[in-house]
Image (tube, rainbow, N blue to C red; front, top):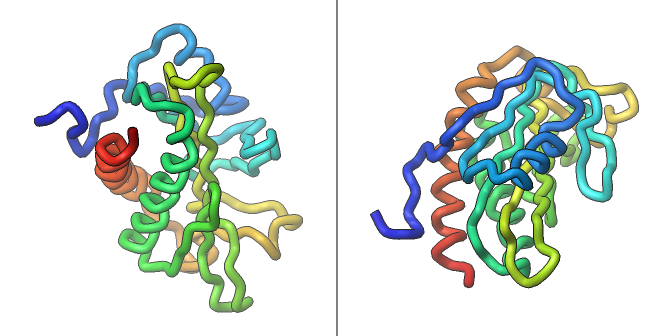
Length: 196
């Protein structure tokens, strides 16, 4: 195995929580304190889930919410391309596992096609945060929130959707997470090899 190749499931440690304010907040504390690459912080629900620019992200129980700590030792100029890679991994996994039509909306959202309303709606978001204060990252955080079986606020009816709404039934979010992580490591290995 070369330096840039990773096992399909390279998660080294899982911190599973019932409820947390934000997996991203905890992951940042752990990363600053030296937590190794491959640490996954996973929560059933978040009370203060957030996206870019600290926008709130509805995170009720039933969705998939996690942050993964990475230490790729890549320059900060590579940050945007990692967000795209994560979006592609998410979009591809949603299509494969649930057979729903998705697309990546740059820089950090994945949309699903709602046949009923004939609209693209947000089904998940990605939040990349880094330690970069200079040219190099000491750590990178990949935060992901996916609407699987979770209810969505009425205020998001026109713009967001869940897998449950699309398929009209509850689905196996654990299976989805397993497939997503396996797919993510493939994209991550490719990103490591192709960015300088």
